[in-house]
Image 1: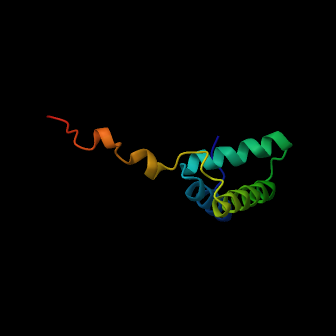
Image 2: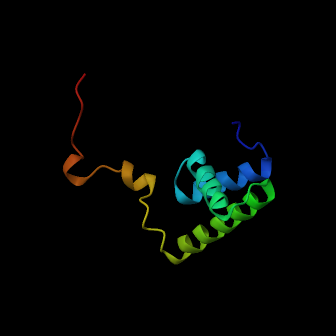
Length: 89
């Protein structure tokens, strides 16, 4: 099954992915799962759900509650005990 190619829908999913620190496909899946739970299938409903999820994630981010999922930057930072670790060829 081909994915939806609506530009606004893809933009909203990209913004959601950026805000949550996840991939675009994961953000799209999150929107599609929320739409499936509500029994909605049309593109406009998915756009509405994507907007709602984006607003919620932005409000959580502004209030500092978005610390539950680890941000990619935090995951890529070296731990103090591993800072001097080097891989050999």
